[in-house]
Amino acid sequence: MIFAGKRPNNLGVNNGKLAPCPNSPNCVSSQSLDTVHAIAPLSFTSTPEQALTKLKSVIESLPRTKIITENQDYLYAEFKSNLMGFVDDVEFYLDRNANVIQVRSASRLGQSDLGVNRQRIETIRAKLKEA
Image 1 (tube, rainbow, N blue to C red):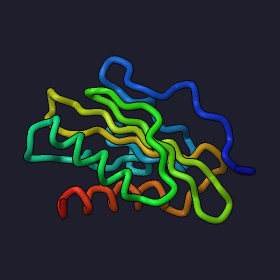
Image 2 (cartoon, rainbow, N blue to C red):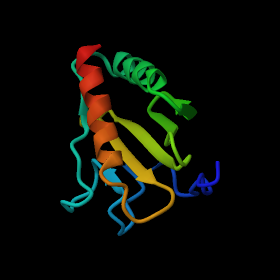
Image 3 (tube, rainbow, N blue to C red):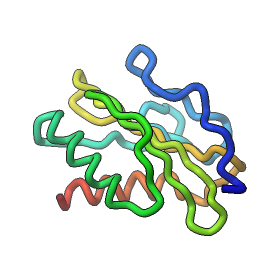
């Protein structure tokens, strides 16, 4: 837990938006407009409720993961790195108007994440398609 850092105070959904990424490259968001941080939202063909249930089960299947907050349109989990215990804050917002799940994955500490946050979202995306 040496490198866990403090939980950010800007998490959650505000007017249909997740918090913007900081300037550092260790964050991805489906609501970001710049190429460094932008990533596609998660799509689904089921009902929104089924999509969130499936998402929760995918997240729970991943190692060193803890779901912190969950409600009908939002899920927030902490992912801890294996070696040093770095914590990433990962948010999912069910955007019913766009029929997608908006995502934001950000490292708490450091500057670069060596692509870990982007890779995590792509892993979740792939597992959602398998399920």
